[in-house]
Image (tube, rainbow, N blue to C red; front, side, top):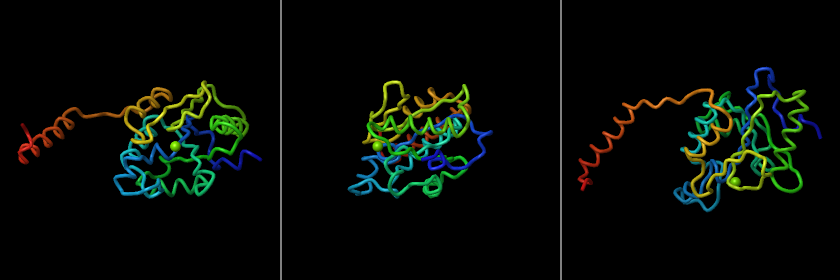
Length: 201
Ligand SMILES: [Mg+2]
């Protein structure tokens, strides 16, 4: 087994040294979304667009690269290119959706697979920089105590709270600016609509 089995060839020099280990079911998929679509199981076509949008925001804010840690990476999505194609279908395009690897299969808890990927990545790169940081986003706490996990709720998938926690762990490189006036404007439109519909008390 070599590191090449798990990495997409890319320009390591410009790598931002921020890795996001991404689970799929319970993160980009959710019971809320599947139920809303009338699906009995999670599917690649049923990702929650809000969760995907929040993931894009997280990647934008941190410049993180993605490693797929979901069991999907051992079945249908075995290459980074497959994931890049799938995410593009949700409007999340490469190079922002920069999937660089899939975790290997290891004995024991899933935390071991993350450790093994990082070990191989370290070898592949000839040493990780002092600034290397990673975060795991998963709805299952199947990790070691010293691994930085942001736990999601399978029912909801990724929410803004978890995005903010992951940004705190990875460090924020691009601030997301909320224009206060435009938010007020959106609130105003909603109130006007409610008023038109006689929904106000
Ligand atoms: Mg999951």
